[in-house]
Image 1 (tube, rainbow, N blue to C red):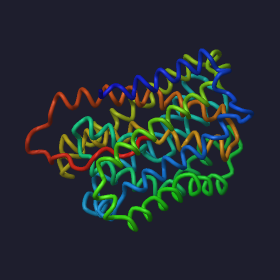
Image 2 (image 1 turned 135 degrees about the vertical axis):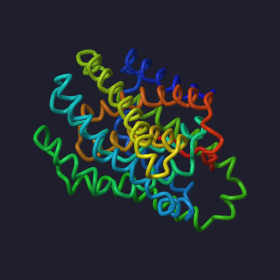
Image 3 (image 1 turned 30 degrees about the horizontal axis):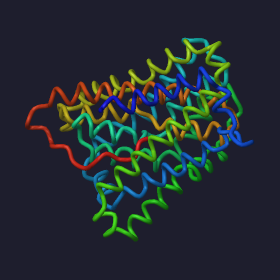
Length: 327
């Protein structure tokens, strides 16, 4: 069961690649034009799972949150830039990898943290914090690292992050606050519905963008796939070993290290895709995010299986919370 979603995502990518004509346009509407609304709905769903306690955790766990956010917004963009240079990718594909590294942590990390028996509450806190910082961090990083490759309008990117991510999350959180009792009473059912809806949204996004970029995949597919795999695995390794090295004086334990590894390695690829299409108007820039998403969800499910079978010492903090909406 842990690997079911990863295989579903992989299957969608294969089907879209083999039969691109079936997922390019429906009833005269290009499917790529529906990606941004789909991501906005997923972000709204994420917001409905958030309460005041999730934001309080940021204050209570500053070292862990700061470690994850710093790694995400400093090293992941640089790794994306370096990999694009290593594989000699063209300007748009290179910008796509920088964009993947420059966005917030993905809420899929919350689901994987739950399956991995890591600290779900901490995972949610880190995702919230990076999402709130993304309107400033993402445009700045893109301007600095991708500005010489493609045209980057930082103000438009900032507005796009607010429109596509922050506003829907805030609206969802407001709905949660207004209907707190109802959400609490039906939490298990709502979590299941939101997770299923979000998984469907991610699969739809992958179908649309892989189909539209099938020609690019045929010519540069191996390089893009290799770069995406290395980008994701570098995030896992960087998050885990940085937390273990800092653990001696920052009170980060094995459970924290596993949670940070998952958070850093699993970027919000849906956000990157929506920004590439909705703001930068380029399906080619969006392609690395979707290849990354396919591999990220597959590898994340494998990592969850490994972590869950090798429990950390009993002294570590116990997991808390439930799986959130993936993206």
